[in-house]
Amino acid sequence: MQPNTTTWPRPAIIEPFSGFIDVGSNAPAPTGSPIVWTQAETFQMVGNLFDLLTGIATLKKWQEREQDLARIRKLESDWDGLDSEGPNPAIMEKADLFLRILKERSPASPPMRIVLSSDGTVAFEWVKDNYFIQAEIIDPVRVEWMFAAPGKDAKFRIESFEPSSVSGAQERAWQPAPTAIDEPAFAFAR
Image 1 (cartoon, one colour):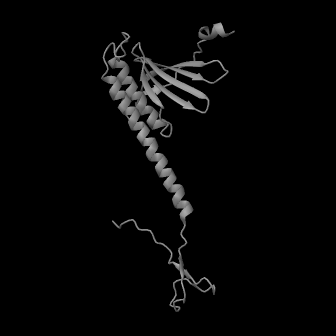
Image 2 (cartoon, helix red, strand yellow; image 1 turned 180 degrees about the horizontal axis):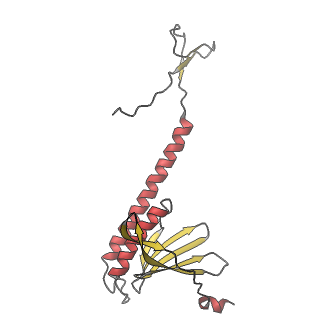
Image 3 (tube, one colour; image 1 turned 45 degrees about the horizontal axis):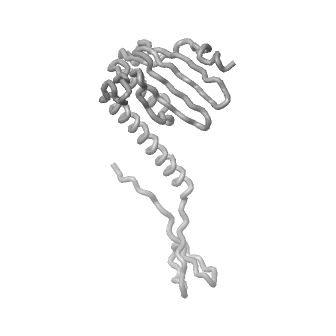
């Protein structure tokens, strides 16, 4: 296995007054104070570096969300001092699975945060521009999605976990259920 090496162009030496340019030949050295100038293909490298750093930041966010779930799992009843329920182990198991599925299907969009509600459900939240999205694991087989934007009614959808076969191995995967809009929740707004 050969080491990963980068080949750089030879530096050019420019004499300020005569305009003499030596691009690495055996020409005589210029007199006076030469300027050494190196030209490299940096645009592509900077673009790749930016992508790499963005990827690292995104991976860090996924790790933080995994740590959030680990912290939530350790909470007990009355964790907030207001007699709230502790996390339901079955819901926590689905939250772990849900996070893995999100990471696999949408690796560039980790949730902004994961929180435990007072009734023991787990909510994943995203904010992008003026939109708020929440996916709440409401029981071991269902997730309720909420989509909200300023000046608009929130939209709700419920999806369920369904067993499916993936590569011959039995695994649970996220399967969208028919959309259900919660109209009564916003009847007061009319």
